[in-house]
Image 1 (spheres, rainbow over the protein chains, first blue to last red):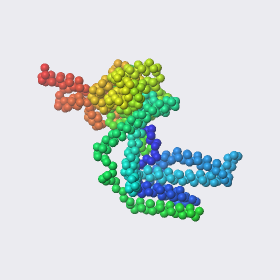
Image 2 (spheres, chains in turn cyan, red):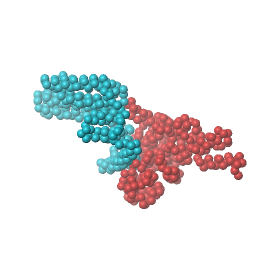
Image 3 (tube, rainbow over the protein chains, first blue to last red):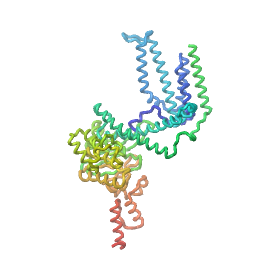
Image 4 (tube, each protein chain N blue to C red):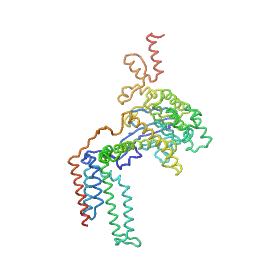
Length: 268
Length: 286
């Protein structure tokens, strides 16, 4: 647990905010709308209109801002580097010049736009995954993909695979940590020593980890069969989703803002 | 006697400074001397495994920790501690990874940098100690039975000839005979070669039978410490911590409640002797 606790991306953050209570299907549908307005935005008004819904969601989710910061830190480093590179290499009117170094206005604006857009996109995805439990998220996916079942898409199976995969992430991390410690106690540390020794040590981690996952998969298969699992034939859902007024309002607002943003682009 | 493990005012928290912070150990002081067999008992989440990991140099907390005379606040000392301290974690058979049993047992000794002849000698001795014959040397560890796999994993630690042995429920899931054999092995190591053993266990019979001293952990603090006899005579206190006592202790308590003159007992042989004496006293047996 101590080794891996800083993995925060896509982690559910318990709460009871408006966003937590929203229908998970609406939250999934909201994402392409936010993406559309963020990507279509051109000109200051468009950028502002694209950013407001994300900032509003940020305020409504009731999750400490530091949590997002931890998840986005690394990405921001990458984006800052690209901003610097773009400002330096893009030809155009000089914003600032010092010898060989030439910062162009066009490059800087372009870099800032990219920075802003990607930050908004990542933030909106993070808000959805942090306010929705993985189980609800996959169940909503399954329900949304239902129409494609007619064309042979195995929606239930896909959703079940996702649920199982998500369910096993913490177990695998826990097991990996236990094995790392056990091998470390035998002198096989993956964080010290020469590259060769570290590679050897990672074999000593991966083999037992793989053996463990096969064992778990086997046990799970037996447990599922023992409870007569046979896919989604004749299966009813425990979780019944229902669109409520807030869901419809949120989707409506997002749709209009996306259309408005697209319209301002046309004018600009 | 020299102190092998010396812990003073140790506190350990997981995820400090976050809303998920959890204090695993609070102001724990703990000493293990050479040749001692120490048991740690406590309900789930009381900090037993955390304490064991601190002693193995795998975790660091606040406070003074000295293992085999080395200060554990030094990172170098912590990283090198595996050469002196043997740890057997829960379900150690899950750490097996080599292609043969022999190679797996040799993993630790090879990491120690021993000569090939010495590695061979140690692996053979260790496998002999855990009762695995030459016929398994070249088998894949995954081909062995559960009990054999456990013993192979234990051999992997013994082959490193540690100065201290830390055991985290080493007999969980074994049959009674397997349990006895494995615990006999650890007891012998402790008695004959003066290797101190720290055993974390939920099996009170095992603790009563093997330990010189017992420490009771509760919510990250040491709630009681003493000989098995002292600890298990306080059955009511243990019950309030969610712990049980061995059969013999329960028997002596029940007999004492009936007003019979029996001593506090903790192990089965003791119970047999006491009951026999009692029956003789009452003239029921000659």
